Image (cartoon, rainbow, N blue to C red; front, side, top):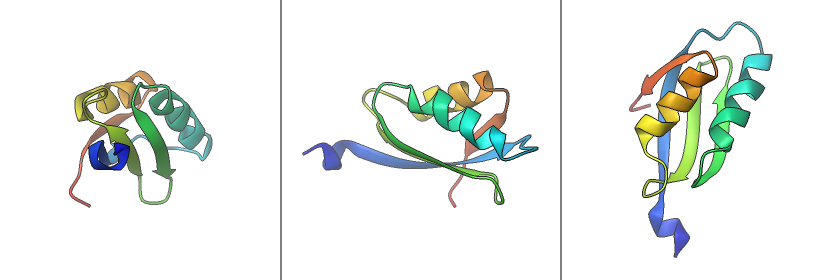
Length: 77
């Protein structure tokens, strides 16, 4: 049943300078309530998040990335 409420969100991010940025973002976003999985792709500056939208919105994820020190925005791909 939880699979029906899981949303897959892709963000484009700016400001990646090293692979350690990946860990920083994954930890920050992964702490959000309702987030099941976070994958940050360093080479393409993409962040993919599987989350329960009733607990964590896209705006919440963007804010968490911002708190980690990076800018991001929702992306279609």
